[in-house]
Amino acid sequence: MTHQFETARAQLHRLGRLTDVVYGLGLASVIFWLPLPEESLTEGEVWLVELFADHSANMIAVLIGLVFIIMYWVRSNTLLTALDRTDGVHTGLSIASVFFLLFLLYIVRVSSEVTAQSRCAGESVAVMLIGIAGGAAWWWARKKGLAREGLTAKERLGVQIEAFAEPLTALVTLPFAFVGELSWNLAWFVYIPVAAILKRRDAKKNTSI
Image (tube, rainbow, N blue to C red; front, side, top):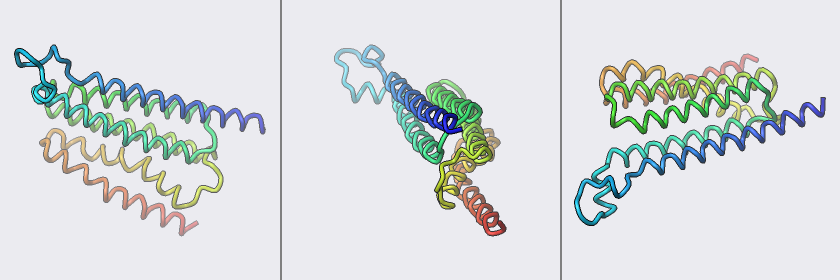
């Protein structure tokens, strides 16, 4: 049994390294979204300020991609550090979550070349898939006792909200993608009441136990 535990812990470390590598590749790919001098729309000498201004859509995509990578790396780190070990199912779900992040980055990359409705809906679906895979991974980890010992109720609650609030919010925003971009952006504020409901639900559950 001790050998199995040590193997499962080693697999968790390998999973952490794998996800870090994928996030690093995501950062590298975002850099390649920056426009090259030969893509300049002006003749003669090329100035970086003019180049970036000519391709402002690319610059916005780079910024959004960077924000997503930072945000999801922090969340991934929170979920992994709450665990003591992993197994095949949890590892597969975690890798799927990272894959859907790469899919989200793809949607951000092509956002200026597709309709606004398609972009918004695509981002909602990608965020939802990331959250579903991540939430399922955490649910499985709790069910199988993979969480580390000594994890406080407050820490468990934080991980719970991290895992489930976002996909639920993304699901709510999906129909608003076909209403209008402003409505879709405002719909993301639903995250606040969703997180509060999850927090209250978990508190009632702990009280009743």
